[in-house]
Length: 325
Ligand SMILES: Nc1ncnc2c1ncn2[C@@H]1O[C@H](COP(=O)(O)OP(=O)(O)OP(=O)(O)O)[C@@H](O)[C@H]1O
Ligand SMILES: [Mg+2]
Image 1 (cartoon, protein in one colour):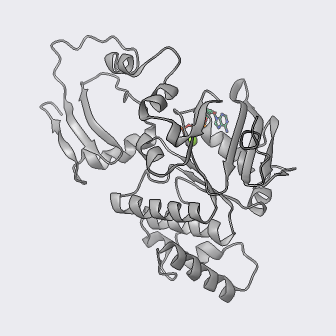
Image 2: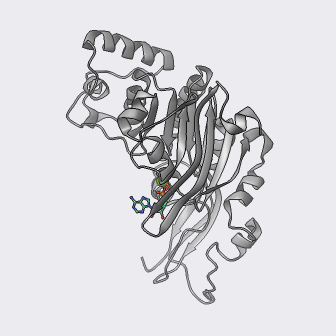
Image 3: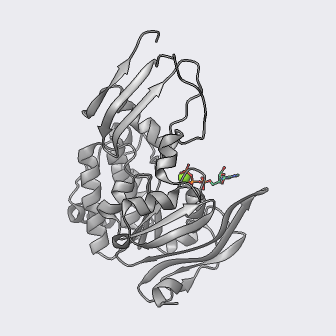
C-alpha cells in the first residue's frame, strides 16, 4: 500500500482508519478509511442516509466512533471532542449557517476568541482581502444573504487557521454568481494547501472543483480516487445499488414502482427543464399519487429547486400547471 493510501505521508492532513458507528441496531459506518492531503479537495458523494454527515460529525468530535482512529497531520487524535478537533485545525461550515442574528459580522466571527479584538480584526480583514470577498463587519447577521452567512462561517474557520475545512453541501442555497465566488475561494484555499472535504449531491461540482472523489453507500466507501481517473458515468454507476444501471433507473422511474398512468392527466409537468446542477428534467405529477423524486438528489436539493419551479430564476424549459390545481 502506498503512503497516500495509508495516510502516513507528511502531506496527509487528515486520515480516518476503520471507523465504525452504530445507532441502536442501525450500523451506519462500517469501517471507513478516508484521506485528505494538503491542497486536496475531496468530494464526498453518496445517497441520503449513506453516512456522510455522521462521518463528518465524528471528525468534528461531535459523535464518538465505536471503533476507529483519526490522525491529523500524522498525529493520532486521542479524544473525540469538538474542542480537540478545533485545536487540530479541523473546521466544518455547516449547510445551514448557525449565526447569532442580532450580532454583527465581526462579533459572530470573533466570538470564542481570547486574543485582542484589534489584532483579530486586522487578521480578519487580511483574510477577506486574501479571498477577495469583503463583508461590512458592522452588519447584523440577520441582514446577510445565505452566501454571506456561509462566508462568515468560513471566516470563523480561517481565523482559527483551519488546515482541514469541511463544507457540507455549500452550494445548495446559493445563486449562480455566489457559487462562482465560492468556487474561487475553494480554489484559492486549495492553492494555500488547505485540505477540503466537500460534500455534494451534484456530480458536475465534482468535476468543477474536486481533486479527489469518494463515494459512500450504506456506510462503506465503495469507490475513491483522483477525479481525473473517473467519468460521470463511472460515478453514477458507483452511486447506484449493485446490479442496477442508469438506464434501468430511468425505465422504472427510480423507485421500482409499477403504477399504471394510462388515462391519467398530470397536474404538473416539467419538460426539458434545466438550471444550475440539473439538466433536461422531464417530470409529471399526478393528483393523489405518492410521488418521489427519482434520481440521485436529496431532499435539500428538491427544496433548492423550488425557486426554479416557481420561475424566480432563469432556466431552460418551463413548468406547466394544468387544470385541477
Ligand atoms: N443521531 C442519530 N441517531 C440515530 N440515527 C442517526 C443519527 N444520525 C444519523 N442517523 C442515521 O444514520 C444514517 C446515516 O445518516 P447521515 O445523516 O450520516 O447520512 P447522510 O449521508 O449525511 O445523508 P444526507 O445525504 O441525507 O445528508 C441514517 O440512517 C440516519 O437515520
Ligand atoms: Mg448529511
